[in-house]
Image (cartoon, rainbow, N blue to C red):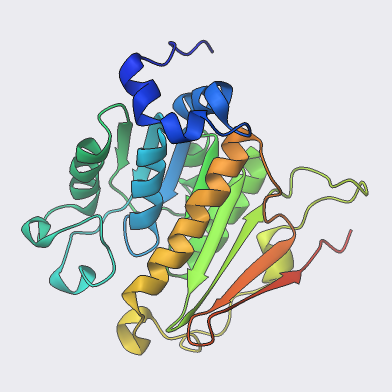
Amino acid sequence: MNTPALSDEELERYARHVVLPEIGGPGQQKLKRARVLVLGAGGLGAPVLEYLAAAGVGTLGIVDDDVVSLSNLQRQIIHDTGAIGQSKGESARAAIARINPHVTVELHTLRLTVENAAEIVRGYDVVVDGSDNFETRYALADACAAEKKPLVHAAVGRFDGSVTVLMPFATGADGRPHPSYRDLFPEAPPSGLVPSCATAGVVGALTGVIGTLQAMETIKLIAGIGEPLVGRLLLYDALGARFDTIRYRSPA
């Protein structure tokens, strides 16, 4: 698909990308052509959407059926006090328009399920998981694997988080299939074992760290640069100010 040339205004807007040899004009064109689906306009989705919009990703899809509440504002920085009671998707779309008018936003005001996941992800190039429950994570990961869509997955706890990239439909240099979400987490933990953010709490800035890492991995995937976190789980301990990486692989 042909993408219109970058305008003078866009060249100035993205100048710090264009001067990077790894991105340049061709990479910025890839970003402009890209269609990225973000599941959730919450703690993780907020920084993902803001940075991808600022980076010039041409189309951002948002899946969220929730409304903005006062308790969201401590971490969901794409929303503000005036958006309380408003649809999170509509609030995020308004914020993205303020950040970058060149970005198109597609809203999916629904809850992603096993039944509708494949149809939703099919129209996008990369998918970013900002969900907060295992049922949704499995449904999304299975759909992305079936539809051959790269999935940038993350999760956060009270003071820690993790990020990985899932591409089980592709193979590595050794000829082995890349691992899937079910290779990393064969089954969900028993109900109630992992407390929700509402129960356990979470530092707002932590979701910014992890969501920004997701945005960076997404940009790498689109531009075809660097080494994405495929087969690697990046762990962040906020209290210890420490990053660690665990390698994992498929059993095949």
